Image (cartoon, rainbow, N blue to C red; front, side, top):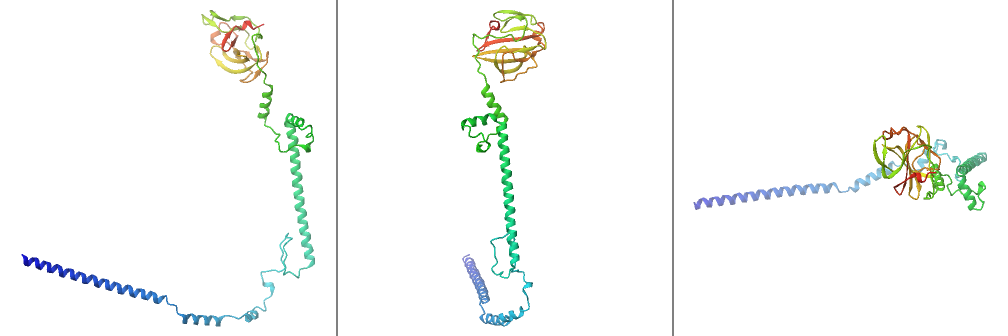
Length: 332
């Protein structure tokens, strides 16, 4: 057993030595190959000065001297050249060719005339443009004065009448205003102050009998509904299509539709007072518009189903801070 182990160890040593020899041999061969390759590359980079000298000598022999060039081109005239010494740029007053000593005086005079003519043409065009701009400015000023005479008058007063002439118009101020801005300015100046008080009275919106009277302290009978109810307004008999007038000066706060009163207009009178007109047709006012007393606000409509037995009528209600007020106390 011990002999076998010894034999195995001996074989392993032999194998290791053989492997080491093979590796060293391979490394040696590889190093020799790389060394030869580097030497060949270095030999390629060596400059052969003898060859360069020979090439320079051959090139010098093949070159033509300056005298020979003059001889070759002696018969070539200036007419074959691309350069024309008599050339001068058109409309160029400050460009001179120093080599052009043989220029004809007549050509020079013609060039000067053309240059002056070009300057005159440019001046004429600039003057025409300036005149057209002045004419357009004058038209704009006149149109601005026509569109906004009120503002021009105020500007004239402010400047002491110095800008009444067209030449004194201030071009830095844009006097052209849009229609919307002018409308807003006019409406802002003519808005009346609503001042309805307890001492003021109302006019009848329409001539007619009172079908259902005002009653907030006790119930009152409604024929169509066949029941007793409180009534915060009065119902005035009318004829369908009859015109309805404003009972007082005021501003229309709303135009709407109600199931009981139909087309309805609410108007502010001032100091918390409001008037409500119902059963209207062909309404001629809109929200935000101001109405003077007696102005038409619409016509009498076909009564709603809540007032079918009463017939055509006008629903007329007065309130103070939202609380009903008997309109008969204000009507003449």
